[in-house]
Structure formats: structure tokens, C-alpha cells
Image 1 (cartoon, rainbow over the protein chains, first blue to last red):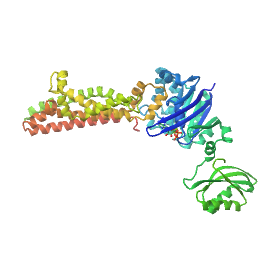
Image 2 (image 1 turned 120 degrees about the horizontal axis):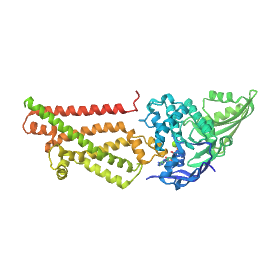
Image 3 (image 1 turned 180 degrees about the vertical axis):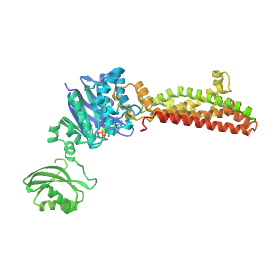
Image 4 (image 1 turned 45 degrees about the vertical axis):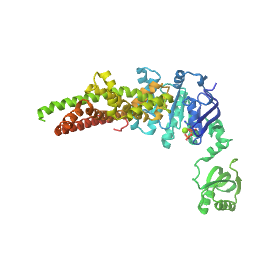
Length: 335
Length: 221
Ligand SMILES: Nc1ncnc2c1ncn2[C@@H]1O[C@H](COP(=O)(O)OP(=O)(O)OP(=O)(O)O)[C@@H](O)[C@H]1O
Ligand SMILES: [Mg+2]
């Protein structure tokens, strides 16, 4: 039995002037011990989805089943108790500013009705685990972002939850701090067996710690599965877009037209692109590259997104052909 | 006025003014606090939205706030008689002061409570906190600094109202200023009461700001 099961989940926000279908018929199973990444573009519905998992947001229809319990059948009190099993960490940490580190961790346990002595003991353990023993009497305003997120993680762990939901937990942090927070989450997953759901818009987060991934596109579940299977053979357009995007396009300069260049033992691929950029004074976006250098010769293919300007496009294609490369058109949907 | 008469008169005035201000502020908070909490809870984006309750409370607060204090004081004379037994003097003035100040205080508190980061409230909800826990363990403690600043401003305003009440039978410095300074042309008395009111206002302000700064944990030391 999966630990978290989402069945035909939909969420519609009705405003005065417009209605937004934030989630459409989402079906997903998350097993005990998974680190499940949920990725999508901004506005895709990721936050809404994760907030439905602990019923901070009530789904418009469909069911959320956690550990065999259908959340829609729970009384408000039972729901609050269940939430002690489903902790959450946030992009902006959301710590109590007027409580110190210990006080923040204590808060979660006070809500859960723990005894003072147990609280103190547990806080000591948690501080050790997240490496903040020295900072225990500091207030959030005296801590860095990474340290604040560690406090939030300690607070999330205080009630011995089965699940931790992370909504963009590393998005406000620099790359080094992100890595250390992700490592901490992985450690928690491995040592304590806690299931982790990670919402992110960064591919690198999914790549570095997730076992499974679901791709949300415009409120729908585009694709899901193990990270290896989805990343090696993305099927949906949304998945391909995310996986091949990498660095992202250069603002308005880059257009929609894409070409595939095929290397069949030509001179190395990198100098070709580099000299293309230098000699033609154009910028291209490498959408996808699967090339290998074998003894200085390139094999494989590369997909380039061309500038909007027609003249520049022709210039690029002419240049590549003049270098003896095969150039094919790629339509937007099928690369 | 000779100094040996002036000093006891002023001491009495200061005492009465402080008495009216502190007791009125206290009662205004006793009424204003629950009112503010209800406003925040029942607001459209509150924890327990109740459109009708919210709209009624909101309107009542606005109505009371829009009546000028002196007119309100006259309007509630029957109520003042009922509660205090008479319509003049320091104790009696507390009744209209509380009625005028409670909606003002409620708005002050409401705005302080609304300043609390919704993310922190959401975090508490995600931990399974109940509505009373969110109010008393999250919203009020997090709003502490702003509440203290608000209380400072409110008691200053109430001090001002209490002085104004002197015009129609309230006690304290305001009454002294009116009856000696205005009715009997004793400018020296008028002058001294004004100075004392300014000093009292300053003292309230300094104490309030000091406490709010001392208790604010968001300031890096
Ligand atoms: N309370 C709300 N009322 C109305 N519309 C909402 C509400 N919450 C979210 N939406 C809408 O639902 C859609 C999905 O929002 P959501 O916050 O889930 O996106 P997201 O994938 O988390 O985006 P981001 O990466 O920017 O955080 C958006 O179009 C958003 O405007
Ligand atoms: Mg989001």
C-alpha cells in the first residue's frame, strides 16, 4: 500500500473574474521511503498540489489518502493530529521570529502536546542532527538562510513524522547551501526512513536526491516514474522541455525554430559551435546534446534553438552545412 | 496663581489624568482585543471567514470611530450616569473614554495582528495547530512589538481625549486648563497644564518605545 495516494485530485480556484484550474485529475502514488520530486514550471500547480497533500488546501474533488486514511473523512481534530505526521518545510523557512532556535523546535512539540522534559531532550537530539547546537539560543534574525532552513528541518522532525513535504525548500539558498540542505534531507531519508516529497522548479534538485519524479504541467500530471526512467526517456513534451532546458534561453533573442545537427565523425562538436558563435556573431541555445568524442571526432546529435531573426537562421544553417554537417529541421513538439 | 497653590493643584491634575488614561486604556484593551481578534478571524482571508459577522463588526467599529469624541461624550451621558452614578469627574469620564477608545484600539490591534507573516501562520497550521493555538502562540507573540507600539500610540491618544473631556466636565489636567486658564484667564495655569500634558505624552512615548525595542527579537544584537 502506498504511503500517499492521490486519486483524481482536482483543485479549482474560483475568483470574481476568473476561475483557475490549478490541478486537473492528478493520480499519484508515493511509497514509504521514496524521495519524490515534483517539478514543473512556475504556476504549474506544484504548491497547490503539495498543500493538498496535508489539506492546507482542500481539493475541489478527488481523494488524498495518507497511510490508508482518506483525509476527506477526518474530523478537524483528527486532521490536525494527522498533520503531526506530515511535516512541511518552506521556501522562506517560516520560523517564529520572536522565538529562539530551541523555542521554534519546541513549538511543534507543544502543539503535539509533548511534556516539557521530553521536549528539552528531543531538542538536544535534533540540534545535534542538524548541526546547530552552538546556535540554539539565537533568534532567526541572527541566522543565515541555510541555518534557518536547518531549524525548520529540526522543527519538522520534532514530532517524528512519516512524511516531510518541502515546497521549494532550497530555492532561496545559494548552490553550496542548497547542496548541504539536500544532503541533510537525504540523510534523514536514509537514517530515519522518512518519505520526502520535494517540490521544485530546479532540475538539479531532482537529479541530486530524488528517487522518483512527477512532472506537473499546467495543472496536469504530464509524466511520472523513477528519476532514471523519466530522465533517460522523457515522453511528454513538458518533460522534454524541462530536461533539455538546462541553462534556459537568452530572453527574447532566441526564437522557436530548432534544428538538429548530426555529427557522424566530423571534427569535434564543441569547436564547431564555438566558432559558429564567434564567426557568425549569433547566439544559439543548445537544447540537447548527445555527442561523444572519439579520438577527436564527434559522433551523435545536438539540437539548437535558433535566433528569431530569419537572416541569422539562414546564416547559421549555411555555416553548419559548409562545415559538412547534416542539418535537419525539428518541429517544436517532437524533439 | 501662587506657587504653593499651583503645585498641589497640578499634582492632583496629573494624578487624575493618569488615572483616567490608564484605567481607560486598560478597559479599551479588554474590549478592543477580543474585537480585533474576531475581526481578524472572520475577515474574508481570515482563519474562520464569516462574512456577516465581519461586516457587522467592521461597520460598528467604523461608526464609533467617526463620532467626534466630545459629541460621543454627550451622547453617552445617560449610560455614564448608569455606570458611574454621575456624569462629571474623572471616574465618570472613563465611560465615554472607553467607548471612544475601544474601537480605535481594536483597529490598532487588528492592524498589528494582520502584519504577522502569513507563512508563519501556515507553518503552524501545517503542524496541526488549532485556531486558539495559532492566535495565542503564534499571532499575538509574533505581533508583540507592533502591539506595544500600538499601545503606546493608543494611550497617547486616550491621554489627549481625557484632556479634551475637561471641556464638558471631565477631570484632570484638561479640566484645570479649562476652568482656570479659559474661564478665569489664568494664563500661567493654562501654560503649566500644557507643559505637563506634553511631558506626560513624552514619558508614555519613551517608555513604550523602550519596551518595544527591548522585547523585539528581530533586531540583531
Ligand atoms: N489561493 C488562490 N486563489 C486563486 N488562484 C490561486 C490560488 N493559489 C494558486 N492559484 C493559482 O493556481 C495556479 C497554480 O499555482 P501554484 O502556486 O500551485 O503554482 P506553482 O507551481 O507552485 O508555481 P511557483 O513555481 O511559481 O511557486 C496559478 O495559476 C495560481 O495563480
Ligand atoms: Mg509554488
